[in-house]
Length: 312
Image (cartoon, rainbow, N blue to C red; front, side):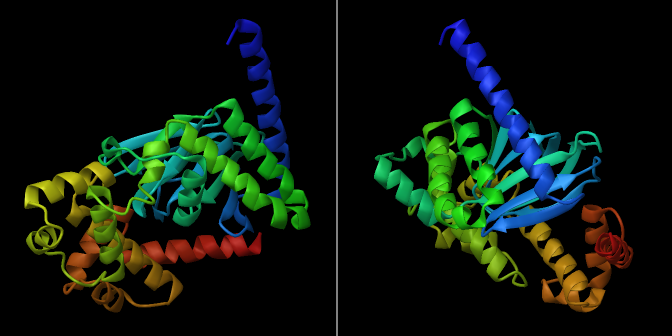
């Protein structure tokens, strides 16, 4: 690409970003998360946020304006309007909006990734996985190129036309997946459809941890069932999720307990027992380590913030 072509592409990307910003600001109310189509969300924030703990589903996330930090255990991922983030497993993360203001609000688009759709696009395009893809971590950040941004903006343009959205959005999402597969994230996306090997084994364990959240995780038994050594299982699990199996289970348990207390009005003792803790005091200590304050105070704060949001 010569200098003239590079300058033209740069201008085109800037125009696309400006249109993306204008349309997303108009659609998303202040400090809100809005689902515009099944599995497609936009989020706006007028100010930087405190760190929030959550579970990120397999998703493609792109920022139109502002920036965000995502912490996966002790690994920090920073991305902005020039980058996008991919996650291919249900991962417990801590994240916060870094750059945002009333003049330039933070704007994020998230598309949940459907493994069946990713598989279909790979098959139709003749894209094959490689054995070297097995040890790839389930989250990463990459630069946004002109073709990918163009596809994203085409999707954002549909938000104003629900009838067209229903028909055309699935086609554009396929294009976005195609662009991702042709870029640096092919190896990561292939994890969604891998049917054998170490990645699939780790994915199976992640699913079992979430489905049997109150059951103890027996590392030796799990490794044996997967046909792996204990050290091999530990190493592969950490290479994909950035944390040990027990760290992963603890974060998943604490986040589910938080959901139960907030969403189903469970008290601390019942919620802690529901997710596998026998000692409420120990649960409270672990909860404070992750969320910064004890369960009762945290849930009261969340309800207060939720009430303020409802009143806006």
